[in-house]
Image (cartoon, rainbow, N blue to C red; front, side, top):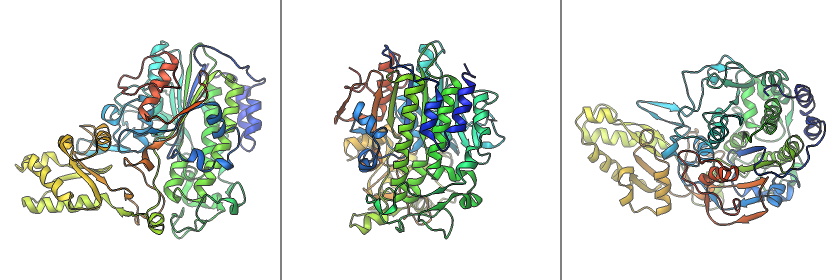
Length: 558
């Protein structure tokens, strides 16, 4: 099945670059008929990185009828889907969608987290090597994730006859959703300019993936210009094109349309595709190639395709959620989504697949945008806070060595070995650190995780802090900023958007189910990101992932 339909696959690659709608018709020689069956032939999960829930409606008057509007018109929307942990970051979000549990259980406590006395990237795995390139970008696997995914459970339930594939530009966005038992995950190597995998999955690229890379999509896409899809004066949901809240691609560059991608590529290389809508196009093209190359949806058991759209996150971080760049990216995403759904109708069969749309996190308004509109807001640099606290503790204990290891995700880590060696009472140090941090009025709450149950913190926020804490990988001192106070690693902290905290702008995400077995409807009842996996598992009649804490969503599951 690895080399299924090579002729149609080559035709698809050759025609879909500039004519995606035409490519969908070519993908199958005749449309698949609509079918009704107990379980779908294929499950497709689409995670849009940094997609706030309100993006479903903010640009709705400009969306076509076959993308987001089709999902809402024909599918079931859980309109009050919340992320029930913090930090709200990419790796934790993708892991939580597919495992049905939180970082406290699945262990993906951030994009990076502590491993002993070093920081470890979430999918880092030095025991494997790249497949498809020679660089370090391929030394990745899901081994650091401590729970199974719904794809893993699907493989187990079918005695490994189901096929599971992950596709994204970001490695973590392909690997963590696909899980431990996946046939493969494919992500983009910026240096090589192609999709790769690792030896965790296989020893060489399959023929279809090598053929896709040989098409040189990145080279062709980066000869284009990024200009607005519609006349720029019609982008009324956004700030002006020359707003001061945006960060240029290169130093002293401009932040106005059009963007000459070929010129920018000379400075930024293939990595530019992560931050422009052409990267969305590339991701869907790879997803279509994977579906055809692997024959997904045409085997004896249900298959799964996990797709993540990463450029929306990079564009949001760089330009901010009120920018024309973000608006244009979602208008283009809507068109790509429509073409992809039409492709699934033809290749798998309308009514024969289950599709869900969600996000890994949302994003906040830019700090200066807030202040320009009289919303209390200010930047906060976590590293500066940690340095100041470390200096204060060293002075208090007359220590020459650092007593803090560092910080991640609004959490401060202690240098436990140093504290013990110097004979310092760690419990006392924790109390002193919390009291000192409380003098910073940018924090709404500060707590020692071991004492958080007794802290005067609202239950919802307390639960999200506990759910996001992993004993071996997270910091024990928690800082919870006031609304619209953002920690940022950028030089100014005043461009683009940020995310990572418990607030609605970061944790309210779309959750829409569509396709086989799904009736049209909507609920405003609160559901959680961890409810998505058990919902899919219930629809497939398979066991939930082994760390799952979520519940099937009523209305989706009858």
